[in-house]
Image (cartoon, rainbow, N blue to C red):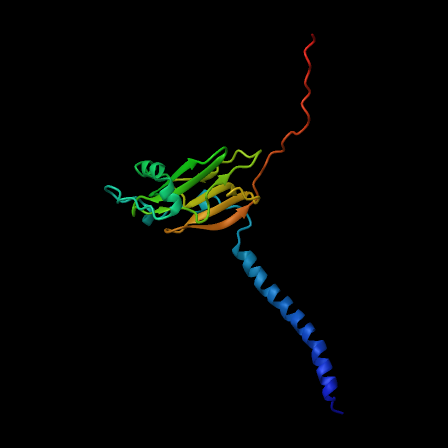
Length: 195
């Protein structure tokens, strides 16, 4: 006995949501482990990203500094002064940092081999968090890893943001929580002096 057109339509309407649910579950099961495997479980360490031969400083004077971003042009004096100093990040780079208020920092990465100044797009300030004494911007001469602790542009999201220097930009590779000590908010007892 062949099903009628009405029965066929009804069966297909009932089967479609079930088929979509199965397809969704299968694609999630197949895609999520791959995405999870690509993300590191523990925060990266400086020793995980050593410099390579191409990261070594070139001999001779630095090429002229090129300030191509709005942030770099705004802080030209501090950036030019830092560019004259020896490298302090990833072999041949100099991180120039400056204050922008109470517990606030910003920075630029200066490539002393090319003269290029790099800043994080859209970041005007890196604010700290009460109860956290981590450096706002942490880096090493012998590593391509740079760690930012705090929040960007006074947004509520705080964390430790791990960036890898790729040779032309900082690429975020991991985000972790920002450890914060508990703050004592109990009232302070005061004594009134006797008259």
